[in-house]
Amino acid sequence: MPKNPRRYSDQQAAAGIDAPLPELETWPNQYAGYEIAIAVPEYTSVCPKTGLPDFAALAITYMPLRQCVELKSLKEYLLAYRNLGIFYENAVNRILDDIVAATRPKWAQVEGRFTPRGGISSTITARWPRARRT
Image (cartoon, rainbow, N blue to C red; front, top):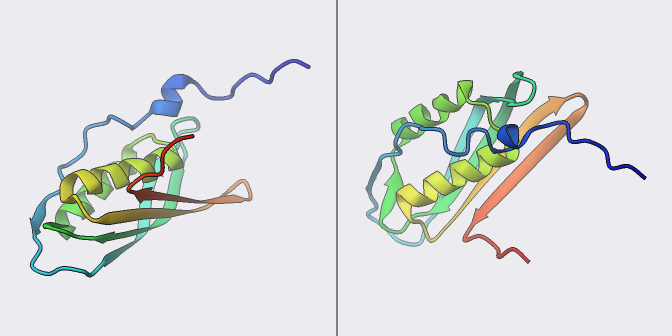
């Protein structure tokens, strides 16, 4: 049985992963043992294959250690995705990686609930520390 050809390129699959984005600023955390939950109901980016807009509600949750993310810089950072071609999975994982790099939390999670396209909706959840690949 012949293998189906891919409908996307390697360039499309990796789109947006290394794109320059605004820096996430932080401020010194004053307390221990609590979590921060940030709701972003109007996230947008662009599908690198079709060029169509993607919409999602993001939930960013983390337990800070020494640093907390500054919300205005987070807003500017997320607005930069508006014109960025990036697959759902890559966007959620990139956001997690950038939050972790900026704040060095005890743990973090980013969930993206993407609106339906073609009758299919997706929820992508990425956690840190990351599970090992097997």
